[in-house]
Length: 369
Image (cartoon, rainbow, N blue to C red; front, side, top):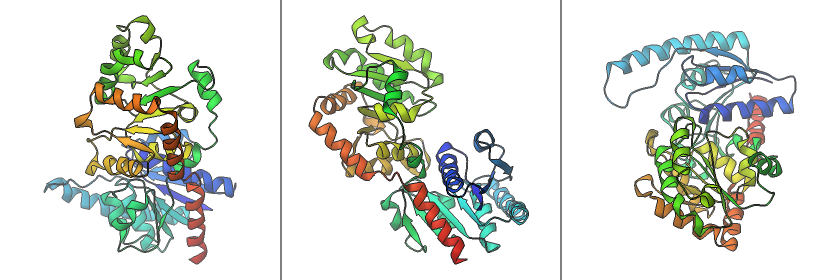
């Protein structure tokens, strides 16, 4: 297959696209991929590092208020469609896959106008503006959450596939996770992570609850602070009594996150779509603190969906305190029956075959065309 992938701005759009591409390559080793993004987005760095050909177009997103910038965006969209058509005609793809972010707007639209099969993937419960727009033109729409379907009520061919990032973590080895942390296999530990860059509100709550760790003597804590908060977090932990400080491991970043996540007894994290896909694919109980600083507050519906399914609990950031976080952690880690039930509920919500399901649909669209 010859496939064009497009989507960008954040890893939440980029990694699902790459996961779909890798599944296509696994099925058909002679597949050829082209990724179309912007030079300003993270995709311009991540995609070439993955050995995938990268081309760029110039496009910006719409502002939600009246602005002359929106006029310029319309002009850039038209120019982006023209540039996309040229790239598509030269590459001659069998299909085009868009995973969100404003860059995929002109690319998928151009493909639809050229009669190339198109599929879009929505990671969050509440769709972004670009995918809402493209739903009128795409031949297929894959959603990560069943709760997304009503948002595409007027669209054709909407199917619940899950997030393809889940497929990438299924084989993660927990033994390697324990080893990388210097913990004995089977040790109970809580993984607290606020994303690759860290989350100050979550970090502060963890630091505030740290003096109470003596109440959980058999539990270790792995605190992923983010690079920019690492020195501050480490300094705060060093003020703890030696017995408590020895049970909380502060690291700026985890490079083998799937393996560490597979070993974790409980995870405390934000509620990004890719993170939830990985958490549920591995069946890890979760306490979710959705970020309020994202478009459309889309992490909160993500967290609500997991909580409703019994795989996790949600704490809104405005309600987050060290005392509340400690109480929630202690209640789960102190009750093995409850924790195992949450793990099973999480696993039931997981869709580890997501990448395969999406490629099945993609192949069907190509055959139909």
